Length: 120
Image (cartoon, rainbow, N blue to C red; front, side):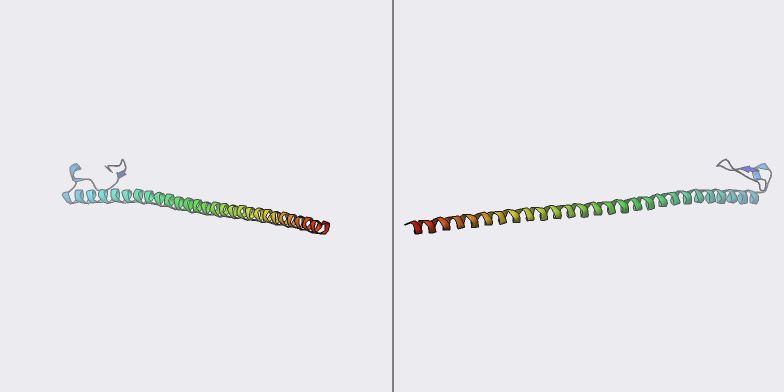
């Protein structure tokens, strides 16, 4: 049994240091290296999957926040338009009152004038 660098072990041929052949030692080393590489790749793949999931979540959150910003902007714009319409209608009512008042004053003036002419 050979203990690997990451604390695991591999049951294989006896290494040359323990009486095995030089070729066996190279094969054992190559096997250990490939197993280490396979483990490293698996850990990396897992890490990449987690990062990918995190990026996806972030994109979803960003999309949601963009949607909420758009909704807020639309709502604000709608509110401003309503306020503007309300202001316009107030101004229009005020103008109508002024016109009515002016017309009333004009009628009164004409009545006075006609009374003055009739009274002369």
